[in-house]
Image (cartoon, rainbow over all chains, first blue to last red; front, side):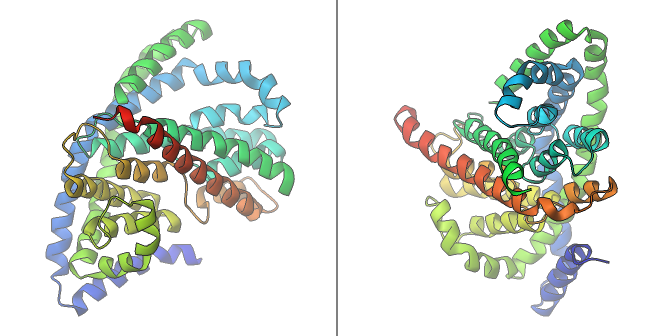
Length: 171
Length: 198
């Protein structure tokens, strides 16, 4: 048993008990919330569907491997492990895809190797950017997202660069 | 944005697949991914329903309002366009709290509620353009605020790492740098493009 196993149960019990104490009809409110949730999924599903197909098709094309093999001399020269190049490209696109890649890096090089450590840091310090943006903006009527993607991708690039630098210096 | 993402990536995939000789995989990916998309949506439905229900209870009992008061000083700097005491700030607080605690699947419904709240509160005359507050929130969620990277640590442990948690300081440095870089470049873009907005 660890503390993190208790976070979710504690939150649920805490919110429900507090609600009952201040005389809120917790069951009626909960079911109303579930209804809101269903509407949310209905609204974001079309965008999500298109994104999943786009990302799946890209993964099947072998494009990430191809780009990485072209880039790998450059990556190696700046101190970034070329073995993590594909992970860096796929991380913003696909959550399950990057976990599968991470698994392969851990198996091939070991968790305490240089590529294994950099991959761990990248996976732990970034999110699935395209998924987040498409779901968040699908929920509102904004179709023109202006500078959102550019700013988010600058963040992802920084994350990869700093991950490699931090592992080089600290570990 | 999505029209470009979809068209460019699918067109590039076709070129790549011809180069790598994986056209058969490319073709079957279209059909296989339809199913994956539906599976993902079903999983997501359960998670969103669960947290939306709890969020509603926390809100009507006044719990989220109390939480939002604590975070108001910081959030009003990040979101200068929003009311300090509105429900939107409550949603944003829940979204950030869930992120930090590592409840990634809970942060999504809170974030979506916040996006809708921003739309309602700002009543923009050009709703087809994302507002600055919307972009700040979405971009924050593309960077990781999680304190303990549980997935990465668990997988390192499973692969026999001598110290699965040794990555922690590096993870914090990388995520703080990524978040700052994303928010700072957003501020720069905002200034550059202000004139071109209607």
